[in-house]
Length: 89
Figure 1 (cartoon, helix red, strand yellow):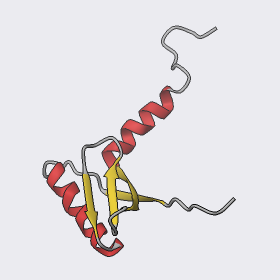
Figure 2 (figure 1 turned 180 degrees about the vertical axis):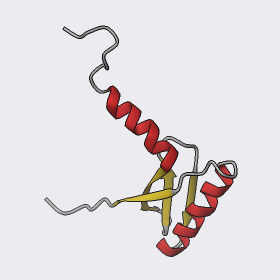
Figure 3 (figure 1 turned 90 degrees about the vertical axis):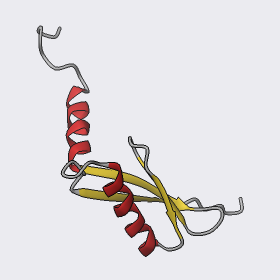
Figure 4 (figure 1 turned 120 degrees about the vertical axis):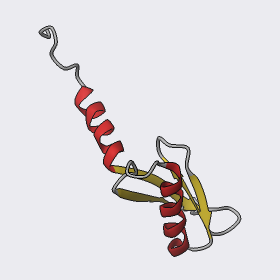
């Protein structure tokens, strides 16, 4: 039995996630069907694409600067690359 006012299981991860949102932003990156790469921010309406990973890094930085007001942008941008591979069975 839980004492009144004690944290609910899982609430620490929610608090941690909220804190993380203030310090970093995560993008899911994948190869585009048309060629190049696409990056979509998790938890924010930010999407960008580029022909190379080097160009994508610059596009992501620019998109983050445009999305957030000055001084409120996350300090770290994390790119999580997702790659699908199809192999014969």
